[in-house]
Length: 306
Image (cartoon, rainbow, N blue to C red; front, top):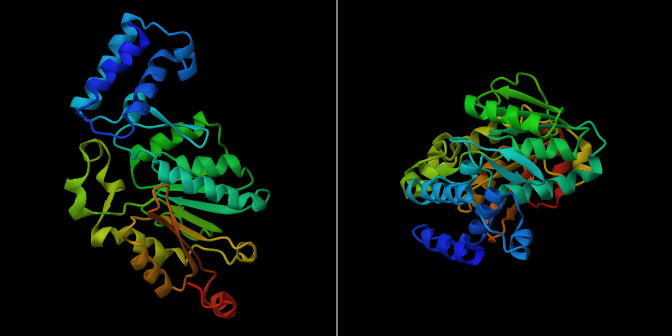
């Protein structure tokens, strides 16, 4: 089939799935099936084989009629130049997570030769831990998750991306970490209120693990646990203070920024920042905590900024 005719056919078949990115989806499907990039397909007016057309129809049927995400159908997603394998029900990495992870890596460049220790809580596919480990090879990364599926998938992704500075542990938050101390704790925790689960798109609630998405207490239960417990696992690293680096970074829902900020203050965190995502929605909250003594010493230097 001629390429332009095929694009129009795919567009028609994708209509039941209202999505602003359908044009991007079409090219992603074509590139994946043909193993050609967009410019190659256009320049050569590529003709598809019957086997390739059959594969495209299978993908569209699964995506439209069974609401299966393309990432699961293809089995991977690119994330900061890494190939991250994904399979249900492990959470699919989102663009918002990729964005703040990229920004964090830029900030940590000044410490890239330091032996810093980073903890990734609820690692899922391992996308955050792997990205940090690759760009900051001197860092020691701990990645934890409660899900056996997530642990197995992260193992696969660590091997695929040739990473040797990640320690993978099955743990319910900090439970199996004992006396470990970290310079930085990051997490993309469950933060969707459980009462909103039924409102999620079928491609999410039918395929992805609810434990990685929803939480009680208006979506704040896990976030609050991380904040409360993290004080016992954060090192008093003055380099982070001197370089204006956060020690706790959490992805949140855009409606939670104020409440999470207040909870951080109650737990002696300071220099609290809220970062927006690509849609100008509050998406990440960052803070610093060096222990009670350091907090008292530095509180006067923070200019009252929380």
